[in-house]
Image (cartoon, rainbow, N blue to C red; front, side, top):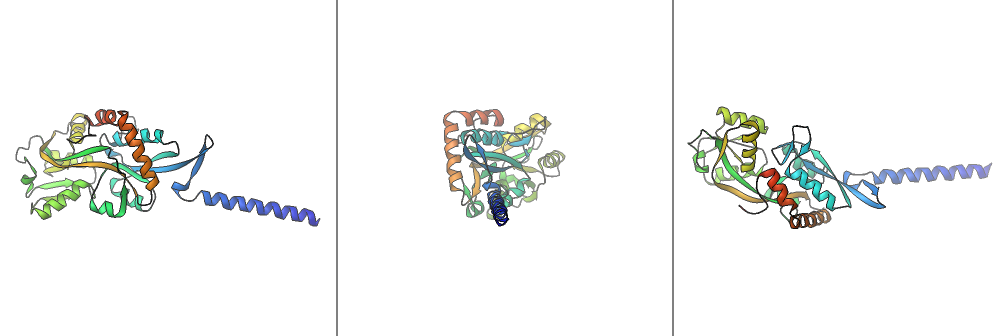
Length: 274
């Protein structure tokens, strides 16, 4: 009887140890792994959006697609040790989600600025160039450049580089523009069409998309305000992931994949400076 009790106790301890080990493995999102072909595959949660035309958006069939989305999928195929899972959210929530480790990196045309560099890690190989221009209704001939925005209502997305740029320019150059923070691209387009706002700061490829898909009747004016390079954004300690993303981007550039994606989604090869 004592021998049977001893064996039962030993079996119970073995089961408890196995459960504890399983709980430890299932910790955070970037600790979860699955077995694939005998090798461990690390799940990576990629934060992106749904309202950036041709970059990350929901198409007419209800599918998430666009330049950044398809690039992430191409990189995923290059990195067998990772499994990428796209997670969509409002642009304004991306940085907080990265900081709190709800996602592992951001794919949403992230440009470098001082605030982001202090907190986070950019990968080193840019995957396209992001030109920002003043954009107005096509009937507006009064605004020809950023200098004509004095006293005008200019709409930008909170925390975007458009917002960072116009806030700094407004202060440093005493421009006197009225900055309006938008809640979504559809609302902004309607406000620009109705005259409730006078201008936005966006890219030529976004203007092209809205003009073709929604007859937005917009036009870009003046010189490019920024012609900044675009990267993925990670937490400071994700150096290994950063290196592997860079390696994949370099390979995809050499193969012409990134150039083809840019032409397909953005209308031109935005992997080079304009």
